[in-house]
Length: 143
Image (cartoon, rainbow, N blue to C red; front, side, top):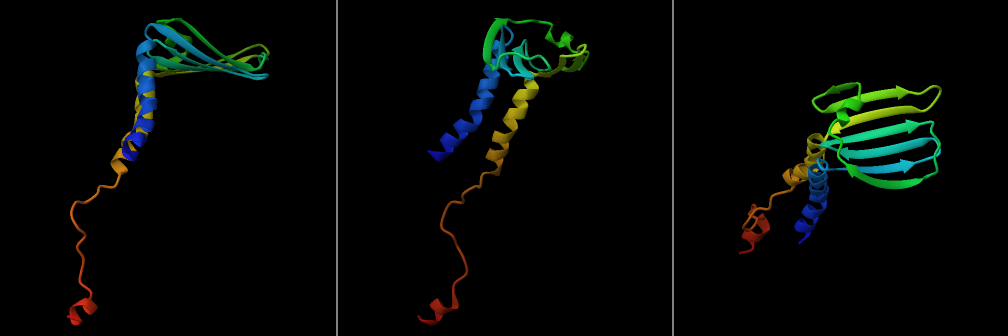
């Protein structure tokens, strides 16, 4: 029972990411955290995870979730991109400073799948049968 519970707990993030990955081709999911000086936006969009950090734009503190139709050209927001990975830094005058990081969902899913696979490999294998060891000298001399 304990093995199945542990396996379910470690595979749940992988299953959730695969579902978000498939859904991202139709819908854009935005998870936002607003703060007084730092705003954070995590967006699943058309097979990629986009993380946007904005500094210097004060907003009312809180969390938000919004869902929009998928944007097929989200990687174009970054100035430097290669194989689905992207990075950009936009400097405002004088503020805000915006940093954008884009990662493909296949990379995020593989990254999350490594710990469960590693734990499964590290699990100790039980041997079948009875343990066999050397006999003590006291047990043979008393017979």
